[in-house]
Amino acid sequence: MSSSMRRWTVVALVAAFVVAWRAETNQDVAAAQAREPIMMTRIYTGTDGLSHAEEIEMKLNGNVSEMMKATSVEFSRRAPAPVSDWHVGPRRQFVITLSGRAELEVAGGKKVAVGPGHINLIEDTTGKGHTTRNIGPDDRIVVTIPLAD
Image (cartoon, rainbow, N blue to C red; front, side, top):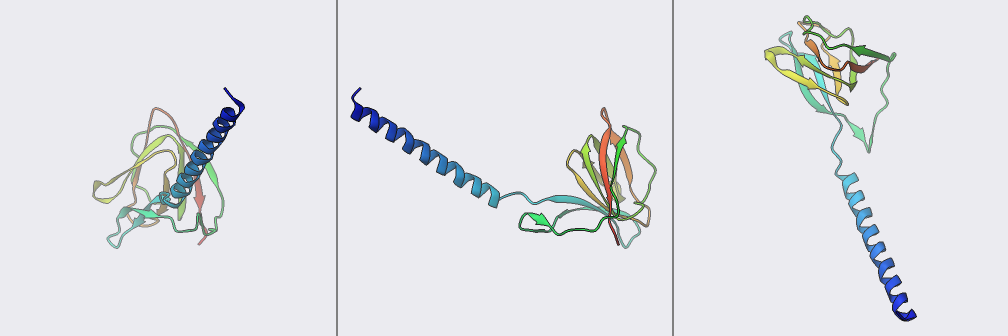
């Protein structure tokens, strides 16, 4: 192969690399602009005194939420167990599942599946409350973040 042909081959390979790299970069930018919102399940007490669940989007400014005031943080391990009694949240708090699975039940028999990465905003501090069932075979690891009033 002549040196001229080798040079054109190298130029062609470099050009192909640059084109591919730019295309990948453009895809990354498009993916960043089309990211899915951060969702959480809000458990709250309705005017009927019963707990209800709704999926809500976390409000973000760009890619970050506003800073929230928390009073503490608690990590816990919760073994698989039968359904708990009906109970309310002890305070307004985030409960974020790190691993394991659970199922919450609210009014009308509505069930909320909870798995790794799921964010619950617990606001049903009055009324009948909700039930929780930690589903096996693994323990459910959660972080609880009580929110300041």
